[in-house]
Each structure stands twice: as structure tokens, then as C-alpha cells.
Length: 201
Image (cartoon, rainbow, N blue to C red; front, side, top):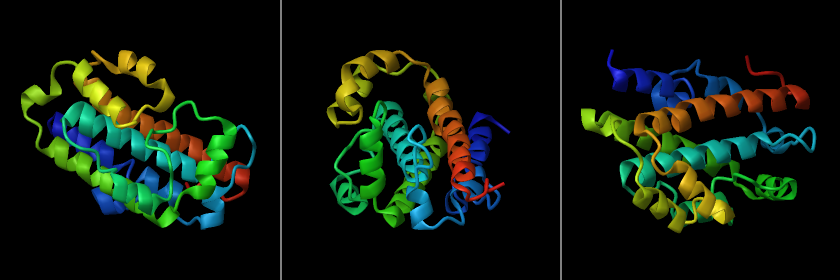
């Protein structure tokens, strides 16, 4: 098993079975078996909704894998913006509690599930085509700035361009597409538990 195979195996564990074929993935357990109302619940003001979690991790993966690491357009475009029913193009970092509530109310959940699957499939396509040199080097200011110009970082663009420029490519890929997803899936499990929906385990 090489780095690419290991990544794809771990990636399947944080996405739906439709993406990586893993019917027992953490994503299947966390996001499965929930009604739309349950997806939108915020059990406490200090907790996000599961819908917000899904939006956040999908947008982050799309932004960092595609324009930042892949030098290609995001899956997200004007058509997806309309289908999702949202008004923002960033990935939700630094959102206020009222903004989280508003996005939770707005987002079309069927489209959101489809969007996350589309992002996951694109990531697997990108990484499957990686050559040895694609794992090496650092992110460039130009690539990160390109994402910023697409509205990916919202009001925090200047800070995030600085933060993500010069990051090791392999570390950013695994950090966003694996560890970031995994951490927020844990958050979603907490929301399920606090909301009385079971842990999904």
C-alpha cells in the first residue's frame, strides 16, 4: 500500500458509501438515519447543527483540494449555490451563532448530501491522479489567493491566505480531507447525543 492507497482508504472512512464504498464509514454512521428536522437541530446555542457540520467539511474539502492543491475549479459553482439555497461561498470559519442558525435554516439538505458526495468523488479523482511530485512541496500564495478571490475565505481572507500559504501539500491534504472531517464527525456525534438522536455508533 502506497501513500495514495492509504489516503483513499482513510478518505472512504469519512465519506458516504456512495463515495468510497465503505458502508460502515464514520460518515454513514454519523449522517445516516436522521430526519431533516434532526439535521437542523441545535441542541444548545454553543453547538452547531449537523447540517452546518456537513456544509463546513464539504466546503473546506472542496476549496483546499481543488483550487489550492489541485489548481482546478471547485465543485461548488453558481448552479450549486442555487441548488443548496445558500448565499455564502466561504466554508463557514468564524461564523456567528445567528449566522450558523441562518445557514442551518436555509440549506437544502438533499442537495447538501449530493454536494458532499460530489466533493468526495472529486477528491478521489484528483488524488488518484497524483504523481510522486504532487505529494511534495508547499502551497503557493497564488493558489491560496485564487481561492480567496472566489470568496472561499469570506471576511477572513487576508489572514487565511497568510496562514495557508507555504503549508506542506501532503499535510494540508490529509489535514483537511481526513483529520478535519474526522474531528467534525465527532462534533456531529456530540450533537446527535445532545439532541437525543443516538450517537450513530
